Length: 178
Image (cartoon, rainbow, N blue to C red; front, side, top):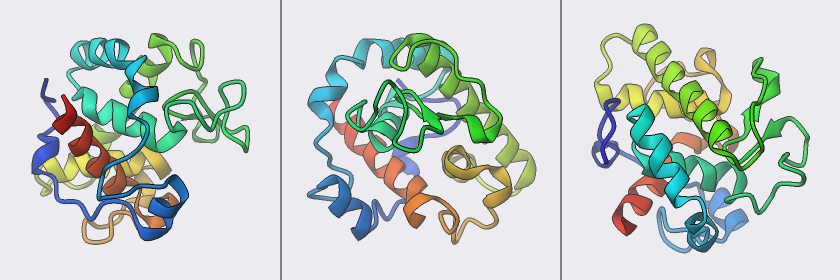
């Protein structure tokens, strides 16, 4: 299932930084050990992806990066208490989370937030290609549209300075797993 926002396989990526890779025990670029935990969400991710015309691999990649498929959450929240759910809807970004932390409602809301950010990036950077806007939206999902300033250093102000590159690599890996 593809996305109307771009082809994840056509997006360039450096993958996770060495720091992120060590934190989450990644072994090769984009490969991760969340696959078993992700399996229980596969049908929901596919359903939301179809409904929102978003590549399910991208949804899975954000879930993997943001919550390790729920493994790092306590009562659905990240350790700081700011992010909520599998896709870490962030109340500091003026979002009010909906649904249970691992629900279809939550994943739908988070996917809609991502789509809105991709559209905002398209407006901010009208000369960017569709895939650049897709990656820019992923970077903005982590830290806001205002913090995306140039494609060349798209992750300069994201968590670990590698958020969109890591998510793209994870999405490419998930896509290869079917």
